[in-house]
Amino acid sequence: MIEQGGKLLQQLDENSLKNANDFLRKQNRETLQSMLMEARMDLDRPGVTARIPAPTNKEAIYLALEIRDRVDEIEKEYQAHPVASGEVSAPEKYTDYEKKFWDLHVFRNQLTNALRWIRETETLLSARARRLASLEIGPDKSEILGYNFGQRATELQSLLTDLEEREAFLRIFRIHDTIGLDLPGAAEKDKFTFAYFLETDILFLKSFFKRFEGVEFQREDLNDQSILSEVSSDALAIREKYSDKIEKGQLLFLGMHWWFRGRYGSGPIARGLLKAPGAHLDEKALFPLAMPRVPPRPLDPYKGDYRIPHYERRHHYTWQVQQEQVYDYQKAPLTRLKQEEVATPREKQYKRFY
Amino acid sequence: MGTLKTTSQTTYFRPTQKLGSKDKTLGDRIVGYYEFGKSLEALTTLIRNSTSEEIQVFNEVIDARPEFRIYTNLARGFENPGSTLRLEPLHPADDFSRSGLFWLTSLARIEFATTRSIFHDAESPFLEVAPENPSEQVIYFWMLMDSFKSHYYDTMDTQQLKFVIAQSRNGPDQKVLAYIRRLALMADMYAAMIPAASENFTEIQLAQLKSMGRKFHKKFKELTHNVGVNLAARNGAAINSVTDSRTQTFYESCTQKCARLAKQVGVF
Image 1 (tube, rainbow over the protein chains, first blue to last red):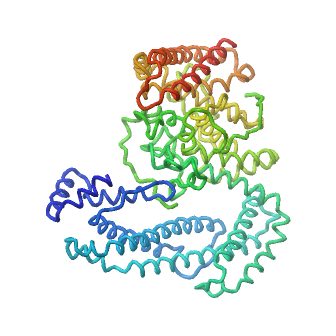
Image 2: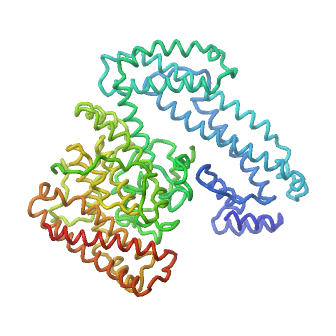
């Protein structure tokens, strides 16, 4: 799509492009430039996609417009989210911390991607400035050449820093709350969970202050690093007392984390069953997967219109993986059983956030 | 199910380990292989060092998170109501959804071993990863039986398999190779259930398992035989995009698994 579509887009003048898109619309398809951008963004998986062909000059304009709009959407969504608005405060319920950390995790990945796109686009446009300026693309599109991508990158960086600070504050709040809990009187399952949270929060803060060493924080309270030693000394006694629970809690939650990735993760090839070529060469490249943005609720494979997780068992399908594809895809038993009743609404369940 | 002896501890969870002659890289790239392996590294250590009371606590932690619930007994939609191997509900409202540490590890072990079986030349992949904890073994073999039955009912009496066997007489194309791989996977699952079968099944159940094994063996043997005849006749010529040497190795591994299956079916 990218190779052929890019060449085609480059060759068509505005009028021909309009006619081509009218034809595509009649076929219930997206415009050529939308399909191209979708294909390109779908392949944008660092550590997963080896190489994407460079855009043609005209495509570069559409790509820049698309990226500007997508980044605006991401920022708008983040700014409107409760986790990003107002002063940072502890949630009403202790159990709500996890939800907040998850939301921050998702937004951090989205904003990091957005920042990378903006920087890459700035480099792309500046490298081709002269050629792009001579393109006949109409004033509505050429305004993107005057867009200040550098300024946008600075704004996104500032948002990311704000997000990091918010998380640090929330971690501090949770440490205080954990210390304030009646741990000896708590249920056994909560002891494991609380002890694990305490440890991860302390480790996060240590790493946070190390990463931002010498950096002036936007929130002044964080510039006083005694906050960490104060929190740590309070937590030390608890850590020692519950060291066994911390150790086991770490194993439990680590195992659950990886299991979740194995169960719900999706690769870029062979209907999500396979990671990219070369992924096996580097442990870091084995990691990236498309993951559901909201922790899913599994559905009974015998009920409903579609299944969560997508593969009720991966081994029902992996035997079909051959070369770089799923050869002659055979529906697994449960899918076949229900195929008549399945209207396949194809709700988009996955959103990239890694 | 009772206990089952395993020969080693579960030490197969690193994707960098030595691999066989099949497509190692493809196996390492299967989504879930690395992830379930890492999960098992942590969870098997946890199980080994925890008391049963602690495991009960872990179950409560897992149970509180719906994303870790697993729907089981997936073969039930295809199984004959008269089957003696049918897994019955625990209570009238049982929807066969389960949660808990051993359910997580059992699912992970089976998915992990599948890649070891299909792509890594492992001789007994499902026994390699069989749990040491007796309570976990019950769940593991329960799930393994369900997995085997799902594949069994999805292949044995289907037009698709008839077509594939007919096609295999003309040469091992991609589809034939995929199906023979599936049958080899089933043979590995079957092989793992056999050592403790007499402890875990009644005589009637054993008879049904044996009957299933024989029928399965017949198809597996036919498919393997046809591929072997064609490989010999082609005498080294490339077959589609699969190189001869890989196909030959693959064929030999399938032949061994088929011979093991024959022995196991006769052992009962």
